[in-house]
Image (tube, rainbow, N blue to C red):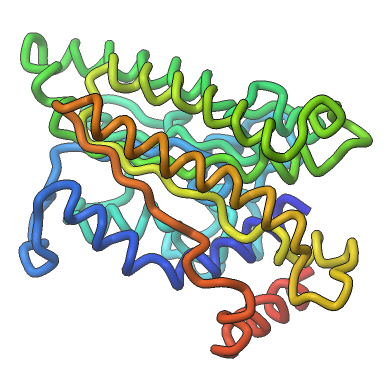
Length: 309
């Protein structure tokens, strides 16, 4: 289920890439035509399978994809990316002018950490227990701990200039999907759906996310982009639950939208109260499933994923 969803959402997210890139360019005060050299000194990536670039490869987990057919269209072959090609983080790094890909924390070493590190881990979530059924993963709290390690290493390279350097970097988050598909939506393994209504769960998630983003701010982050969650109820594994005649599983998408709405409010609140930083919300739900189907895009995505399975 995790792998199929990752592929489906990766294809969906590709349709949003130009919009996401535009807002990230605004975040770093750039114009698209200016992209000929790195426009920020470093790019740090936090998240799940949608942007994992190999951090799960050596972990005891079902959520690893360092084998064909993953990577069949990627110049480095299977690397642990949950897609046939690059991730949105890869494309954004290219648009920002980086030469080469941002290395995963699992293998990053030496001076290469100066340009950034990818901490994302397939099946990871905002909550610590999310995804544990699939095996070991690096949840967001531990990704932040890994970033602290990276900061110490960069301090060893840059010394007193580290703080000012990290203030100029871009920090990119793609996380939250697993807190639903590998937690709240799986009541046979996780108790969260019996403890919280969808509204309450969205509130609890965003509250925890808020603390994690504040931790990153305390680490020196001043340019932060956070992605909303995509239409999980339109993934093939979820469609198998039944849609009652709708294009997708509406109650799932409605639950996710509660989270997205609260995340938007959080970002607005940060921008109002934290004046020396800029936070940007990137929506993955602007195009509704019915609109995608009308465009003839989502059916082809679903067919591709089902054929792959």
